Amino acid sequence: MNAALPIIATTLHVAYAEAEDRISLLAWDAERRGVHVALTRRLTGRVVNGLAHLLEQSSPLASTAPADLRDDIILLEHQDALYGDAQAAPKAEPPAGEGTTLNVPAPRLLEAIDVTLTPQTFELLLRDGQSPLIRLSLTRLEMHRVVEALSQRAQGAAWNITVESAWLEPGQTNIVFN
Image (cartoon, rainbow, N blue to C red; front, side, top):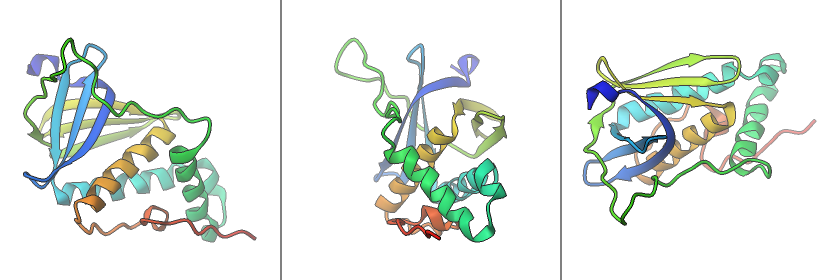
């Protein structure tokens, strides 16, 4: 199976696996090949905060705004990604097989995520050690959705991850209007 790795994911499903106390990411490519990775609590905290920071630093609007408005700008962008009218919902379900049973591969422990920014996308490479497993190409809005999904699963697991970005705090809805 390593010869086919990394897969270029077109579908991503995020869930909490209580028995392992891990967040599971199930990714499928266009050919319906799947890779299952597990995130530890520590890595999840680093990923959520790291990706949130990248969203803040790469925002053209927030980078030119006054410092006291930057969190509000990112919060509006985040809410638009999650609840905006024109936004298509990401595929959250695994691809349908011939039967009702899905062959889900055993999880591999995720150890690192490499992120490359392009003008239009965030290119993510998920690895277990040196082995690349999953490649994702995400727009800003999709990146917001991934960060939110990871954050929500961590919150649902009662992991109490320290969130460094005010706009990502659970229940954050206060926006400053001048």
